[in-house]
Image (tube, rainbow, N blue to C red):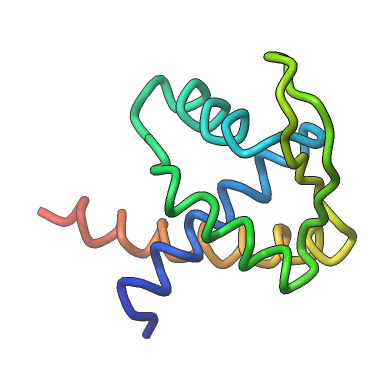
Length: 109
């Protein structure tokens, strides 16, 4: 069984990988997309997000290039790699099985 930290990291990785399927984004845009898409239910803290982005970059799931943000500031833009797409598929399936198992327990009388 995964530790709480592994589960949290895995969930954040999954959210970031899914977010990047929409195209390259800088870190703030990733956090904003997650927040807006979940109707303000999920807020990703900056420290956790950048730790996750760097971890996934080291694993070659994402790659980064410097660019200019919509605010005319220098920013790193992260994009999904082929390895990241494969990881997203595997993690999505595993997370769905996990969530279904949790819901089975929560829905018992």
